[in-house]
Image (cartoon, rainbow, N blue to C red; front, side, top):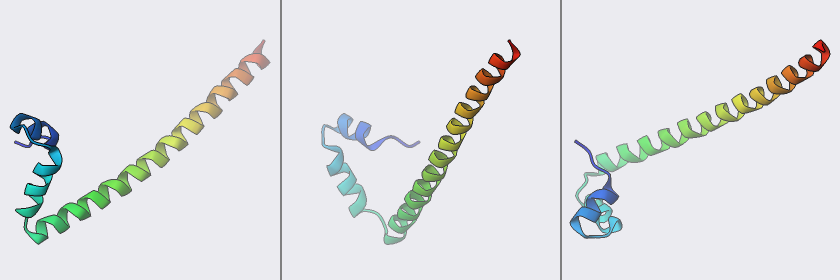
Length: 75
C-alpha cells in the first residue's frame, strides 16, 4: 500500500522535505531515473490533456453561440 509523503511525515512528526531526503538517499540510481522518466511522462500527458481541455471548452463555446443564433432564427 502506498501513502502520501506529506501525510506520513505529519504522522511521524517530521517535515515532508526531511522524509523526501531520506527516501532519496536510500533509492538506487535506477529507481531515481525511472521516477524522473515517469514524472516527465506525466508532465507530457498533463500538457496534452490541458490542450485537449482547452479545445473542448472552445468547441463548447462555439456550439453555445451557434445554438443561441439558431434559436433566434427560429423565432
